[in-house]
Amino acid sequence: MHISIVDQIDLNEAYQQLQSDSAGGVNLFVGTVRDHAQGKQVTKLVFEAYVPMALKQMEKIALQAQQQWPLEGLVMQHAVGEKQIGEPVVVIGTSSAHRDASFAACRFLIDELKKTVPIWKKEYYQDNSVWVNAHP
Amino acid sequence: MHISIVDQIDLNEAYQQLQSDSAGGVNLFVGTVRDHAQGKQVTKLVFEAYVPMALKQMEKIALQAQQQWPLEGLVMQHAVGEKQIGEPVVVIGTSSAHRDASFAACRFLIDELKKTVPIWKKEYYQDNSVWVNAHP
Amino acid sequence: MEILLFGITREIVGQNQLTVPTQDRPETVGKLKEWLAQQYPALQKLSSLAVAVDSEYADDAQPLPSGAEVALIPPVSGG
Amino acid sequence: MEILLFGITREIVGQNQLTVPTQDRPETVGKLKEWLAQQYPALQKLSSLAVAVDSEYADDAQPLPSGAEVALIPPVSGG
Image (tube, rainbow over all chains, first blue to last red):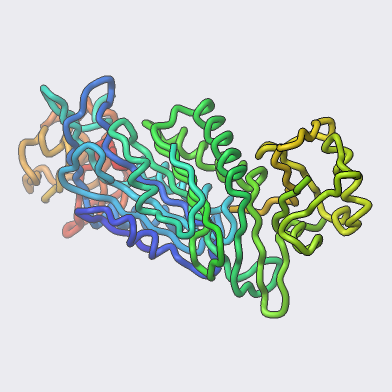
């Protein structure tokens, strides 16, 4: 498995790391910066991570996925720092002999990452900014 | 939507075509040549398509997906010709504001492509070759 | 009438295209399938055999007008 | 005892790290949360506030040995 916190997402590297002669299906999910959120125009995002703990949590999730599905490859990259509209901020990649496993594991990994990995997103709008999810 | 039958899959082109400021999630599924099938060692594959009909069928499936899910982008590339172990043979891409739609549409598109698009795969093993699915 | 062949149908017939003699010319997709079954019994061993008319899947009742592009579609295996 | 701060907790406290005075030193995660609630009432308005000890989520009963790396984890929003 290849787990990293990076300044720039590298989709080609992720695809290379998923390559395996035994894999027939490769899934990539890329989370990108959307121009709107909560009905507001977004100007940019800033991501911050508690890096050692984020890597540990990502590894836990990855191990869970490997136990649940027969995976050939697994990649999780999350970016930190300032990101503009359209830029990738996270890539989740899975590969397996048959596509059922890679699809299911890819979905599981991004869902779990969003729930437990200590990474924080600050959304900047025209007039203010907020830490996403911080308040009810 | 971007639908094509190609000699070489271009994953970066697919990703570029899925870019949209309104998209927060991008899904890519890449089908690759596995080294084994039906318990046999595969040496290579050859793909053949009835091109005009394949494009028409792919377009139909793509329209169905667009009706079912709010997609920002949609890509289907299928390769023809001889492909070696590890090479990509199909890429399906979807993007949408939220990931539920892009995940579901990506899965739908590859499943439907395999059912109805007139493309044929010949598997070569050490000692013989077969047209996949041809016989019961 | 010319019939386009792909995949295993091309190997069964031994040609890239199949010509149906004028005197045998089938009026419908169903009639064409009957003629093919007689001429090439190996086609009946396939898991399925569809016919496309002008690049669309066609059912047995569909007529085969002259000038239509007709193709045999053995079981697909893309992806 | 030093507490690492991230995201909105850093803004609420107004520093990158928080020092708990020796005389207030909490023995458990639960005690630390009580102390924080008193010192920084704005922390109670968050959707949730977890504490990590040595890079692992910790429950209220968990002790805080000296030398442990302690961090506040406000609601995460990665991805």
